[in-house]
Length: 92
Image (cartoon, rainbow, N blue to C red; front, side, top):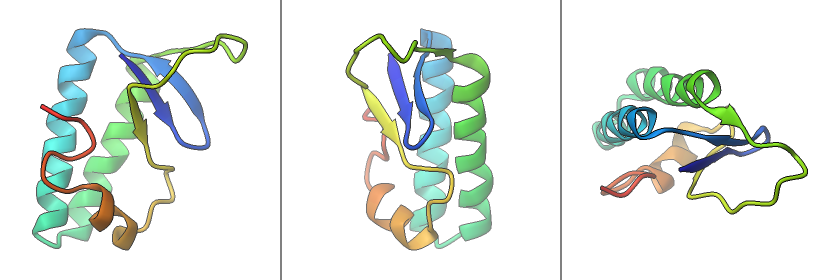
């Protein structure tokens, strides 16, 4: 899976990291639905950290489409409300 962090770049994630990212996405979506901004901030930070730490950066000259696009780190909670709905950013 190729994940893009807006404003940062693309990363390749293996299946194990993808599953962990999906769990965090589900938890972040629940936090947004409950109006828990602090919880969302923590979980969204963990999502970004997971991609940065466990993903392999895609070279800038390599042109591949992203399977998932994560919002930029400075995402507001209001913006999160429009993005983290139902299944979250990652279907499944």
